[in-house]
Length: 520
Image (cartoon, rainbow, N blue to C red; front, top):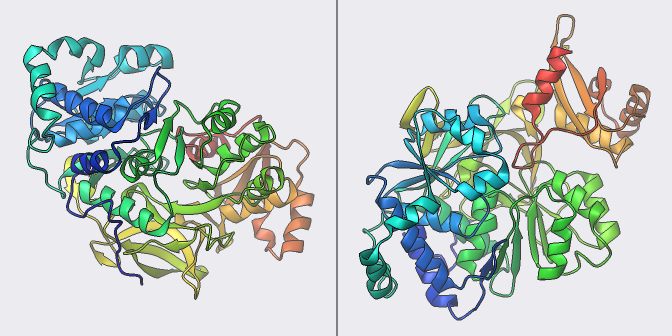
């Protein structure tokens, strides 16, 4: 296993705010470093200034150590508010506004959130006013209203002292203190709070920078939501601390706009999911994507059809990676110099792995990891604000990813599927991801998602949801024979849908699909 290596741009032992200040000193001469959908752009000095101001403003409505909800869109102000709150000893908790009232309410209870900071304009534009108003036992505070509380003394403090000595203007930081609480997608129950320390986030950025040639020469287009670890760490913190230019967009679902932005901003880096990339490639005009040198897929398995689509239409190799919110999130990634399609690349420096055997699965094992980018622990809905440190069958300090993987002799990781995404049919374990791959081999242009439901005779049966109205079981059976797949991989039922339901993170909403399959 490779030894931990951190980039010199991300000193170990820092906090996010200290790392931002260090980046500002190192790259501060670059104008217009960030831009979002508001007029103008932000230099590093603007980011430090906004972080200090929003952090001090947050102190006026919260107590040290308090968990503060952040219900904000993809704007430059959102990471500044998040880092500012943590710099002043608060614990920012990023709420998933696409998850609905029940999930947001559960997250607030799980993380003991009494105060939520948000924006009237954002709620109005996103159509979230009723959802926000439906949250119970929390105090909604609007940044527009709080501006009046930033008085003359605050402005004198900011301009006359804090901007000149930013690290002295905030309390001493602790790298092991919580930097942010993110929430799992809730696809396997109520969302859990994942407590990520400054150490974990900075370690993950250092691991990435030790693996990739990435820095001020790059322009990142980030449309992934910041409440998701992929959008927060890779899409936002990574360019912030590496000196790259960052263009922030509000939604990854604007499939025609994203390719146009890549072209107009000459973006060199784009993060996304397989589902999003399929739409972007189809809507892109010739030349829209030619500036990209890194296109990195995560959060769900990259479809072979999507990989081929990008290569054939745009001449770009998508690099697949892998991670989890609990690991801040990146665990493995392919690189341009060492890209092995079908795998998610090699584990990052400092990641230790154990593969524990799974009854009924002959190849590979369940992946357990221990690494410097590991979470401090969970907040579970049944035990709000009680930190549960990571532990697994591999021991204390280890995390069970729940994924069944293979690790080859060269160190490349191949994901067979989540253990919870296996169906047990007639005593055999069948990966639902293999079923989806089978469907894609027959119908590469359509979208497919497999789930399973209980069956008295066979234990479980597989239900395939597809957007291809012409797809048949006979076609799938013939493809399975040709690919050497067992007949058990052929879904028992096929449901045609106009589109697959997606979570805000870009993952398929398997909970809704399973409910639909069960109700039928």
